[in-house]
Length: 102
Image 1 (cartoon, rainbow, N blue to C red):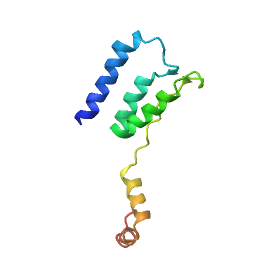
Image 2: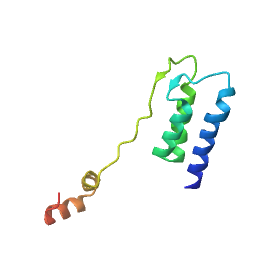
Image 3: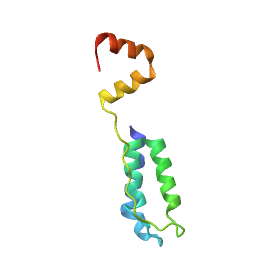
Image 4: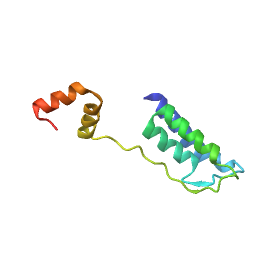
């Protein structure tokens, strides 16, 4: 997805070249830029930007800062995804019970 790559490259450019000239430094580790890149990579452009903006809004003197890594969204395995679908759809429950799939 080109928009994802453009945003990630823009954030990386800011982090590497422009942020060193700013007076304020990030209060968190990893920095807000690194957090934004990880969020966009994991959640996609829209939700990644939402998480990045919420992190940037917390980066002020009212919050203590410190170690705050990005929490990677857990991925569903194929079997657990199938169970989740079966829980939502009664027809699938019947199909799995007749065919003996678990």
